[in-house]
Amino acid sequence: MQQFSVHKIGPEIKIAGIDLSFTNASLFMVISASTILLFLYLGSKEKKIVPNKLSLLAEMSYTFVAKMISDTAGSKAKPYFPFIFSLFMFVLFCNMVGMLPYSFTVTSHIIVTLIMALFIFIAVTIIGFIKHGFKYLSIFVPKGVPTILLPLITVIEIISYLSRPVSLSVRLFANMMAGHTMLKVFGGFVVSLGILGGWLPLSFSVALTGLEILVAFLQAYVFAILTCIYLNDALNLHH
Amino acid sequence: MKSYLSFVIVSMAISNDLFAAEAGMPQLDPKYWASQAFWLILVFIILYVTISKFYLPKIKNNLDNRENKIKEDLDNANKFKDLSEIKFKEYEAILENAKKEVTKIHMQSKKLLDKDIQVKKKIMEKEIENEISKAQKEIIELKKNSITSIQNISEEITLNIIENISGDKLNKSSVRAAVEDISKKNINTYL
Image (cartoon, rainbow over the protein chains, first blue to last red):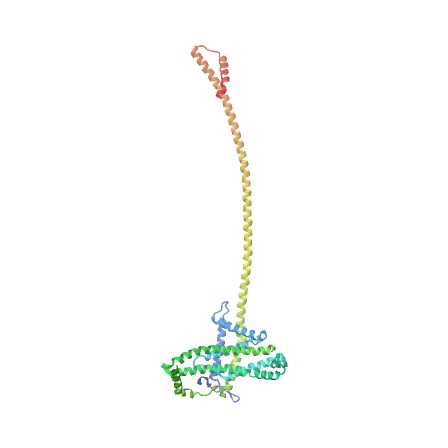
């Protein structure tokens, strides 16, 4: 579990008695964000009719997120496109950077994913109330439900709504932590079994690395698309 | 496989201290939560602002430009295609007209040539006829002349013959009368 431990880099920064020191987690956030910005800079630099590979990738990620938003949340969600795009790219790059050996996976920390999920939850709730006023509460009362079941359903709906930030954050955090732990465990097997027995866990490790790269992309996608779905609930009130 | 698994388990038991030192989840240690939250918010805000202010408009611009350019090029291509079709039709029409004109000119020149030939033929025929009649006249004249000269020759020959045979000089006019008489009788056999 050493790979998940956070330690301070550089001097201690304390503001109002709270420790805000620059840590390895912060370093890898900065690295991921810089990589995204570098990628987007190189990908949008040239204005050719036939794009080069990096431009193509940048434009593909743009159209990918744009299509995801328009498919799930419709045209009303257009103003939130930069946010969803940044969110998707940030989670994706944090996951991918975490796949490099000796690096740190920012998204494998519950506090990071929880803050993102809570922000999304609160923002979506505020957007819902701004757009629809108190009518937004009607998302807890689904249409076509028998009156007898209505109290029960409403309670369930409220619980499910409130558990959104938890499920959203725990999903990403648990996936990333479990994947890295598994890699660590199999890596540990390779070391402990040595040259005689280590081949099988090594092959597992290789296969798992491939799987983890898939999971890294998939979880970023899931995180972004769930944000889109929550946004859709807030923007288009038709439950 | 079973022996392998047991081998793995035994090895795990031996190397248990490898994990023991790292037990527990650092994620649940709240020591650096505030720091992580602070840096996450800071980094994400910077990332969001940079992306939304600079890169997304740029990429969108690039995509739009490309789409517009492609659309424009396609429109232009279609326009040129239509134009080339029109030009081709024009060209075909011109070709058709030219063909018609060629046949027209051909016919006209043929007619003209025919006329010319006819006129020239007539003139030639007339000339030939004239020449023939002239020649015929000449022949007739020559014939006439030849008859008189033959008569004269015959007269002289007759006179000479008679003179040589009989030694008499005959009257010239009587000989002429005799020769004329004979020649009138036999003229048809010579002419």
